[in-house]
Amino acid sequence: MICDYEGSDYKARFWQNADRAYEDAVERVAIAKFLPPTGKRIIEIGAGFGRLGEMYRGYDEIILLDYSRSLLDQAREMWGHDPRFKFVAASVYELPFVPGVINTALMIRVMHHMADVPAALHQIRQMMAANGTFILEFANKRNLKAMARYALGKQAWSPYTPEPVEFVKLNYDFHPQWMGEQLKQAGFVTQQCIPVSYLRAGVLKRTLPLNMMVGVDKTLQGFAPLLAPSVFSRNQIPGGPDASALTGEAIFCSPKSGAPLRRDGDMLICDADGTRWRVDGNFYDFKEAG
Ligand SMILES: C[S@@+](CC[C@H](N)C(=O)[O-])C[C@H]1O[C@@H](n2cnc3c(N)ncnc32)[C@H](O)[C@@H]1O
Image 1 (tube, rainbow, N blue to C red):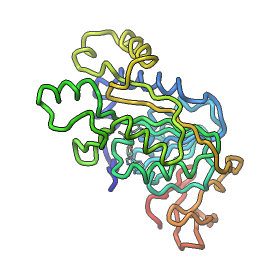
Image 2: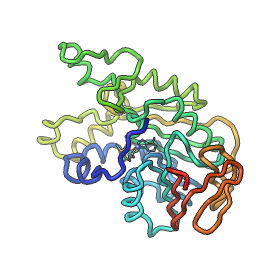
Image 3: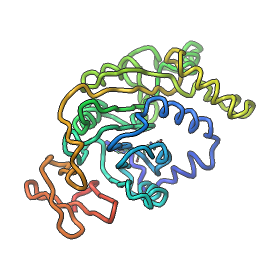
Image 4: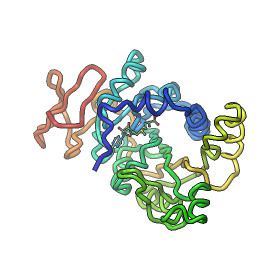
């Protein structure tokens, strides 16, 4: 089951018409801390409308992947002028990449929509090159607000137990230890986890200056315990293939079978499994076989 943002007004509703400058700024601080500043090929999984695109400017090739074609169209409007960008419509559960072609991957504000975390992590691990970096943000169930609400009897679920909580359909909060275990089982080596967005509260955002909030959050990211609503983790790929020297469309394979693709007009065709995938310039549509 996928949380489908097709046709949604996510950009306007969640970012432009809402007071989220603090969240946006502190997430950029966390990413800048973890992101190798330069590299060959980077992908953001669930990139939406391309909010974070400029953070990837040190990379030779930048792939923005999302399940929503309409959000990716917005991303293409923002970044399509830069020939280093590719836009890929696909699900994280069926990634269209040859094993080992990705050096750096990020998934920000997406894991909370995953009903099957092990399946998503397995797919991500498969496409990563040896010594690559995977930066994951996830929503933390063991946060101060949830702890207070639970203590006051205003919340039924415990923030301390390991299992994920689905607080709204297809919206999950995770315990950091549980997520750490999933990452380990998928073959990632977690190097560091940091708490982000400690000051996410309407009253603080209305009263304190933004630069002060961001400064405090940056300091807390350095030493505070993982009790903020958001956690960023940096994970290393310990081994496996490194196929990151592949270029152009050779990085893609059929998301159904993993078999090779060949170009025919505006389609990528898989002779082995019979699937056909539409290409429009720098936009690759692996959402539904044509
Ligand atoms: C809350 S938005 C975050 C967008 C972006 N990461 C950001 O922080 O601005 C969640 C995004 O995840 C995407 N998404 C949800 N499930 C997905 C899946 N199975 N595969 C790929 N993308 C998915 C949605 O289409 C949406 O763009």
